[in-house]
Image (cartoon, rainbow over all chains, first blue to last red; front, side):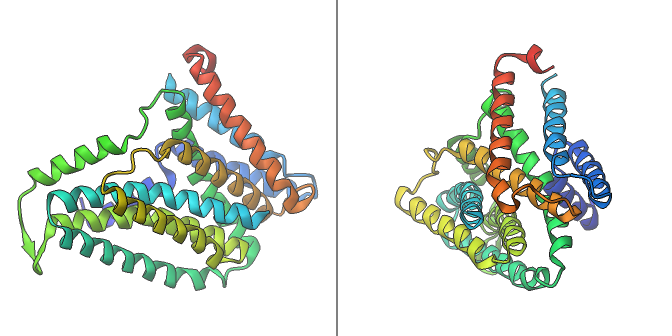
Length: 64
Length: 244
């Protein structure tokens, strides 16, 4: 494995970890929160709900 | 209140990582060569100090909203990883981390490895100790820098982490054995909860959202994440059909 690939793999494991869908879900939830905030709508509630949903589906995939 | 969370989070995260690093260093120190193992620890500590010294001041130059968004997002992803593993461990789906078993595995590998001397050091002992301390320490450095820079107080976060490093090192010196009695999995659960809480809070603020009551809502977010995690553990303990 090349040094560059090892470097990339290390940071992927370090930040993204076992379930990349969590990182993708967080990115989408942040985009939606930013859109709501930009429209002057209350947006604080979205991330907690997103976290609960992402965790639920990630755990469900793991134990199936 | 936020300062207390800041110090506590850095302390707990640092304690967990340093317990794991101590196990690795003890294993190669006992079975191979203490001078080489401690040289590895010293080299890794210097590398970590260089990383913190280079990145710390750079982070303070980034606008606070951008910093909170980036750091919050990273903490959220990072914290959810910790929390997910902690929930799976607490509910029995993944085996608990056992420092005595890790120590036995590390010592067996250290005994089996061949002897190669470089710069007057047992290279195996040096590199294993170096990698162990550097990799575990990187997580601590990430938490200290992200928490500290977002709250505008890297020294406060570093204080929490530093106290944990000293406590674990002294405990390791006294016990001269892996710290198996440290409730590591409970600590990991607590750290995952705190990382996720700060991640939610800062990332939302970074996007431009406003929390009702400002900083005062942080304990409510913490309570939500804690209740959620405990509920998932309870659901998983009741058996697969409950969550699947």
